[in-house]
Amino acid sequence: MAMIAHKCPQYKVTVVDINPDKIAGWNSDDLPIYEPGLCEIVKKTRGKNLFFDTDIGKGIRESEIIFVSVNTPTKTFGAGAGMAADLQYWEKTARQILQCSISSKIIVEKSTLPVKTALAMERILSSSDNRIQFEVLSNPEFLAEGTAIRDLENPDRVLIGSSQTENGLKARDELVEIYENWIPKSKIITSNVWSSELSKLVANAFLAQRISSINSISDLCEKTDADVGEVARAIGMDSRIGNRFLNASVGFGGSCFKKDILNLVYLCRSYGIHEVADYWESVVLINEYQKKRFVLNMLKAMFNTLADKKICLMGFAFKADTGDTRETPALYIAKELLAENARLVISDPRALQNAEKDLIDMDGDIAYIEDPYEAVKGCHAIAILTEWSMYADLDYRTIFNSMEKPAFIFDGRNIVDHQRLYEIGFNVYPIGKPPLSRI
Ligand code: UDX
Image (tube, rainbow, N blue to C red; front, side, top):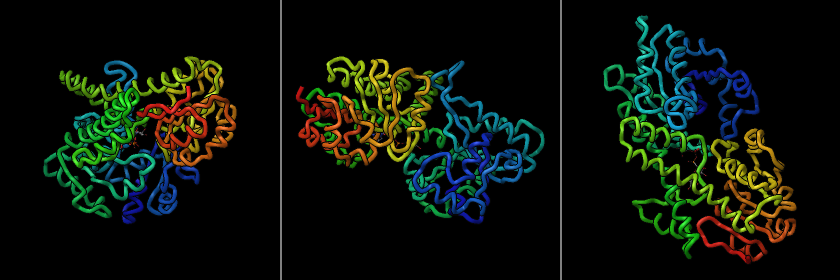
């Protein structure tokens, strides 16, 4: 919404939320989320044509177009628990829109939703006889965290799904007009509503699948003399495969991939296509396996016991350039290491507050130290879990000297110079390459 306000000064954009703390945050200099470049855009537009408010009824009444971006977490109860999307916030929003509206509106689905949700929304919105017309569009968001501003300014494509009726196409054109303020027409594509809803789930499933594919090969590489980086480079130069999203890692995280794949799996199961469901579910299963494997490798390398050993987790965010820790592999790894009675020092330039919240219920010895040089002091091992670029450039000789010996480093992101670290004296365990170890 900040980007729309920034690119289209002729529109008035109001963001409403039921949580007053969040709205207060958006109205302050300390925004509720860290995203490079976002604060600058918010500051430029806030109070001019971008507003943050808790009065949802007023926001609904006064707007012609409503973007619904409520959360759709994985259901934790009832039918489809652990798989299906929890649509209660969506439905409540639909009912509130119906209740507060005094004029016709375009409703845009921004949240990622199972296929056919727009239909349910439309049914709720047309359940009253007040003659107000609602046209529901699907406009999934493909931005990635950490690069959100760049992705919004210059997206690969914008997708808008609408019903193919006269009113549906008219509503679609109004939304196209907004994006045309800064996006070339060739990149704005349209489809029917279901294709649009499904495309979002499928895009995330394909991206996650690439990571699970390369991660599965990383296991094989560790057992042989192959190097997953070299394999990724060789296959990535095939233009049919492409070279992006082939970095083997400790596993993918983030609020979208797992949730959306499970959603897709549930959708397939509900249509009785179990073979297809199993195929996509394996992407998630390989990701779980990769995280588990990482901890088992640590255990095995460190003489099958981690009890009382001090381990520094470098990075807790699910990826670099964000403070977000949702579904971060670091949380799983921290819990497994605590279960082995290891002592943890967690370091991250942006995510320490979230890390503390995530681990609040855990017993065990956990310290949170932002400065990596302080964090590693007296540690037996380092596990690099987030690809913050600063971790590639640290003075590892100083770090080695301040650690217990033998010193171990487990590079869950393959971002450090493994040979150089080995020469300094570390026992080095990369992902998808045979270890460089003296043990
Ligand atoms: C993702 C999609 O990219 C985006 O299009 C969608 O709108 C939301 O979900 P995001 O979750 O922000 O975006 O992050 P992304 O950059 O896709 O990374 C997801 C996870 O995969 C991270 O944990 C990242 O570290 C990991 N990853 C990514 C790898 O392990 N290897 C790679 O090669 C790329």
